[in-house]
Length: 212
Image (tube, rainbow, N blue to C red; front, side, top):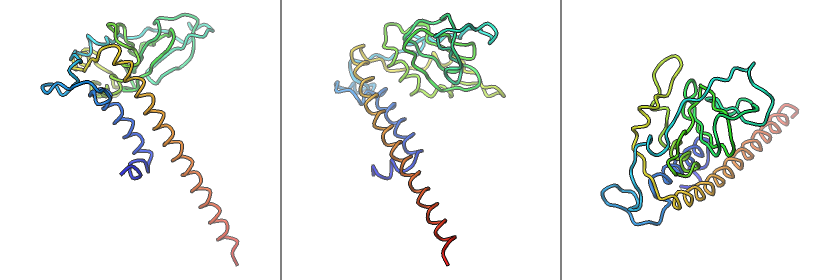
């Protein structure tokens, strides 16, 4: 039931996760499926470390940062700018320590902090598709259970992922963007409906207070 599925913000999050699962399982592809793997027959299966190898970022204390237009990325996303880059774009960054699981695609050059991991080598794969794969595998599964969770990239690198041909990767990225825009539209509509409901409820309470 589509209406029930999109009636709550949590349901929109579920839809976003479904889009990722469809993308990495080949269900957004028209290619014939391999009965043994369940993936399209044109796909390979590879350890994550041979598809998109992660590397720890670099120290950059606040007092060492200079004014510039290069975005600095930590575990939570962009945290500032700098005059120099430590990573060439396009790139992909995710949290290493503290916040685990958020994945950021970066169009241009950037500086990943030591609280982050970035993709050091895409092995010829599309960076945006690599970001989709990293979001889909729930990287928080590979974090240590401690006061400050830390992602163990060596364990994550062993995770097996499906690898479409490059052209198909780009087609999947385009479809995911289209479906993500749909999710964004549903979320905005739900937010507007909630705001309108709250406003009407406020009017109703005000009317009740002034009633004789």
